[in-house]
Length: 312
Image 1 (spheres, rainbow, N blue to C red):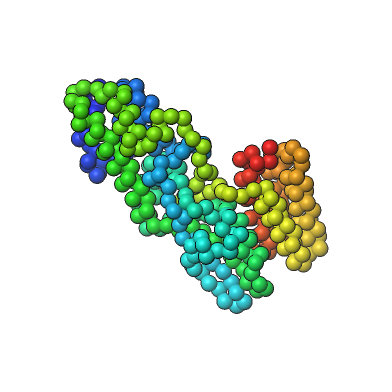
Image 2: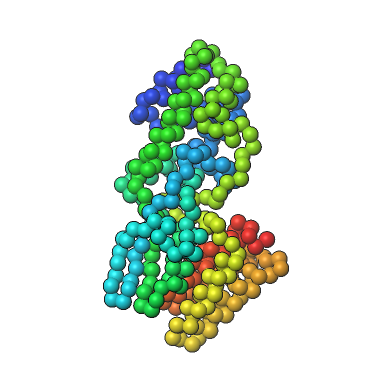
C-alpha cells in the first residue's frame, strides 16, 4: 500500500466527483507513513474541524457577511432588509467581527455548500441588536438580526482546499517516483509552502469560533465584561416598561443578582451562568418583545464570556 498510496492520491485528486474527505483521509495515511506530522495535522483539522485555539488557514476566513434585519417603526413592518457591518451604529459594530473563520469539518461545509442561502445568528449580533434598539426612538424596534451568505461562498472555500491539496501532491510527485515514499522533509516543505508554516510549528492562538448552520450560535468577539454590564443596564432600563409590578420587581432583582455575580472579586463561572439562566427564564415568562431582546443580548454575551473564562 505504501508504494501505491501517493499514486492513488494523484489519480483521484483531479476527479471533481471524489469527495474531499476521502482524499484527506489518504493524506492522514501518507503523513503517518512519511512521518510528516504537518500533513497529518492539516488533514486532521480539515476532517474534524479546527479547535478554538487552532489557527485557521486564510482560505477558510470569510469577510463579514451581509446582515438581514427585520424591524418595526410605528405601524410599519420591514422584513429582510440588508445591512453591512459599517451601516450599523458605531457601538453596535463591536458585536460584528470584520471576518469569520470557518472551523467546521470538511463534510459539514460540503453539506452547507449545497444550500442556496445560509442564515445564522451569533451572540455578537444579539449584542448589536440590543445596542441598536437602545439608540432608536419611541415606537421603533429591531426585531431580529441574522447573517446571510450564499452557499456558493462555501463552494469557493472547498475549491481552495482542493487546490491546496493538488499543489502539495504535485510537488511530491514532481520529484518522487510514484512507487517510492516521499521524504518527510519534502512533505513538510510542500505543506509549509502551499498551506502554511503554522503546520510545521506550534499552533498559534486565534480568534473565537464561528458556528454556521441551522440555529447556530457564534462566539462574541471583541466584547468585554464592561460591555456585559452595560447590557444589564439596558435590561434594567427596559424593565421600567413592564406593567406588572411583581414581574418588574422580579426582573430587576434578577438583574442585580447577575450584576453582583459578575462583579465579584473572584467570580464563580457556574454561579454567573446559573443567574443568567434565571434572568432568561423570567424574561420568557414576561414575554414582552423589548424585554426579551434586551435580556437575550445580555444573557448570551455574559454566558459566552463566562464559559470562555472572562470572569476568572
